[in-house]
Amino acid sequence: MTDFKERVFSGVQPTGNLHLGNYLGAIKRFVELQESRDCIYCVVDMHALTAQLYQPDLPAQTREVTAAFLACGIDPARNIVFNQSQVSGHAELAWIFNCVARMGWLGRMTQFKEKAGKDRENASVGLFAYPNLMAADILLYRATHVPVGEDQKQHLELTRDIAQKFNVDFAEAIAGHGHGEAYFPLTEPLIGGPAARVMSLRDGSKKMSKSDPSDYSRINLTDDADTIAQKVRKAKTDAEPLPSEAAGLAKRPEAENLVGIYAALSNREPAEVLGEFGGSQFSAFKGALVDLAVDRLGPIGAEMKRLQADPAHIDRVLAEGSERAAAIAAETIVAVKDIVGFVRH
Ligand code: AMP
Ligand code: TRP
Image 1 (cartoon, helix red, strand yellow):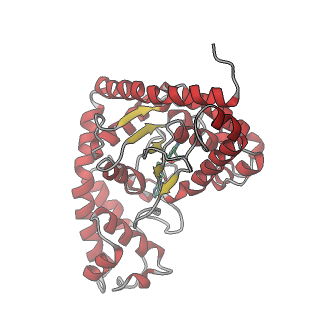
Image 2: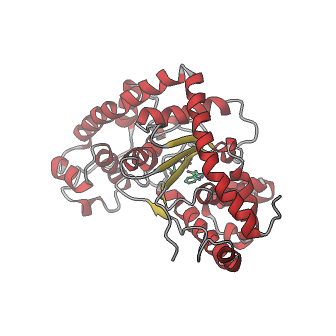
C-alpha cells in the first residue's frame, strides 16, 4: 500500500451557538493533536448553506468559529486555519466525488434522514450531497486522520468508500501518472474519550446540539459563569446518588453524561471521577462541575470576545491560512485532473 504523509484535517460549521459538545468532542482534541501532527483546521462555510440558505450572520459566525479555534489554543502559525469557500479545490473535488458516490450510499446517511425529516422532496440537493463535500475537504489534503465527534462516524466511513472506489476505478491512471497503487488514503477517524458524544442537559437521550430550541440544553462557549452555573444546576438527573464504578452508569444517561463531561474537562477517566464522587448526591457533584466548567470555559469565552472585537485580525489569519491550504490543494487538483482524464493545457 502507498505510504501517506500523516496529516490531520477537521472542520466545524459556522452555524452559531458553539457549545461544550463541539469543544470536548472536537476542538479540545484539535488542540492536543497539534503537539504531534501536521494539522489543518477549517471553518466549513460552504457546508453551512445546507442548514439555511441566506444567513445574514454567516460572516460573524465564521469569525466566531475562527475565534474559538484560536481561543482554545490552536496556533495558526503551526497549523493551517482557514475557511473552506476560499479554496476552490473543495468545490472542484466535491464534483468529482458526486460522480464517485452512489445514490444508495448517500441515501443511507442517518444525518441526512434526520435533517431532511419527512419532507424529503423539499430538502436541498446540497443537504443530500453534503457528505461528498466533506469527503472532498478531507481528501483534498490527502489527510490520514480526522478528529470528530461520534455523530460524524458514518460520514467518515463514506469518505473511505469514496477514496477506495476512486483508487480502484482509476487504478490504471493512478499508476500511469506515477502515483503508485492508491492516490487517496483510507482516512482514519479519531473518535473517542468520555465526551465523543455529549448529550443534552435536558434529555440524556438527545445529543447536545446547536439547533436545540432550548438554550438550557447546552453550555455555549461564550456563556458567562452565572449562566453556566444555572444550566448545570437545572440539568436533568435521576434520584440516585452517583455510583462508585463506571458500570453503575449503565441505563442512567443523564448521570453518565455529567460524569463524562467532568472527566473530559479534567482530563480524567469516568472511573477516576467516580472514585472521587461515588456515593455523592448530584447537588454536591454539580457544584464541583460548575467550578470546573467555569474554570475551563471562562477564559475561552473571554478570549473569544476579545478576538471577535478585532475582525480584521481574524480575517488576516483566515487569509494566510487559505493561501497555505490552496498551495496543497492545487497539487491534488492537478493530479486528480490528470487521473480523471481532463486535458490540461
Ligand atoms: P458541527 O457543529 O456540526 O460542525 O460539529 C463540529 C464538531 O463537533 C464535529 O466534530 C462534531 O462531531 C462535534 N460535535 C457536535 N456536537 C457534539 C456533541 N454533542 N458531542 C460531541 N461532539 C460533538
Ligand atoms: N460534517 C461535519 C459536522 O457537521 C463538519 C465537517 C465538514 C467536517 N467537513 C469536514 C468534519 C471534514 C471533519 C472533516 O460536524
